[in-house]
Length: 119
Length: 179
Image (cartoon, rainbow over the protein chains, first blue to last red):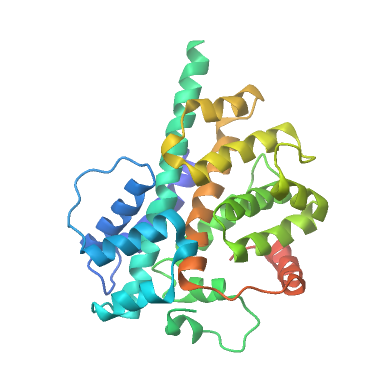
């Protein structure tokens, strides 16, 4: 990617996945990785296995966030997640869905440029 | 919104729930996100501001995000015109837009709905129109950023403005940008 945009992407990833928060960075990174993976990106090495209720929510946010309900949030509250934790988890999931698309798109662009040069 | 501490921010101020999401612990997400959005939607680009807002509207529409479709549709309507935005959302294949814009909408559709299937074939139509890699990266960045904010708008359940309020906010966003 051009230098023009990469710095912005890195700053965004750093804020969401590495800054201080209520949810441990390793768990936020696993949330981002799951969201990216269900969005088509290649991701290996989950640092942490997500609890089932969390994996279900992250998958919903990544695939069709418009289907998230009050009940989905309530289930996680009952499981012990605070609203701040839910904020961080949801942002991490949304980041993964977006970054996955960016990666897939940039890879497709690279492939198309190579194909054009080879032709 | 579903997380009450977000509702508590900027109470009574004439701002959208999206601004509340961006304001909350802004160094975590809002500040770096807004900086990225500002450079992609308002910085130097092959695409006009109106075209970029149209891409944002279309991506949001494909993600079924009512708020972002309305908000950016209003900015695009102000920068281009209302009929073009409506025509693109009805059917981008036949809408009265330039061929580079149409090809980009096709790329965005796949990117939003079937990202796992994205491949060189989806980008070749844009290269065939002599679009630069940088112009294509700008389209992809818009798709990526709106994939994020659309999901937050819907997961947190932001309040959706009336058409009149979207137009009023659109004037502000068109002139003032995102930071």
